[in-house]
Length: 158
Image (cartoon, rainbow, N blue to C red; front, top):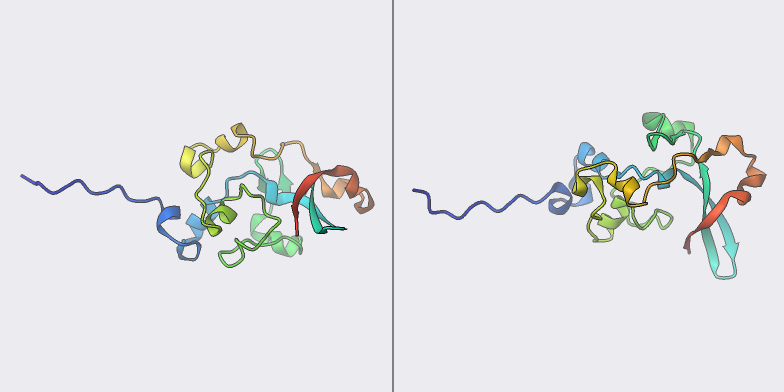
């Protein structure tokens, strides 16, 4: 008869590993699919400093129906301004939304209850109101001089 105590449940990888220790598959699975990093952001100088303005425009590669990038593997060569989030910069990108799993973990916070890795359901991001609308207008359909017409709010002020 085995009288040893039951094994403690194994911690999920995002609690057991640092961002730098994660495999590529684990790293990629942290993305909750909200689409917020694919919104067109504008920088504006204000009296208080520099503001990052969120718009209702999305990157030309964004697929609103799936909230994914149509050319994910090649996105950096197609869209030179596309920023790759890495373990090294995840906690320093002030324009990333507060809800972003990469940012949350880099700042020592846990994943939100609605995150698919916690909830077990991809739809939980939409149900929680975190995901961007699926009907965003592509930046390629709007002239740059009109981008300001699509500002929806301030994401951060630096």
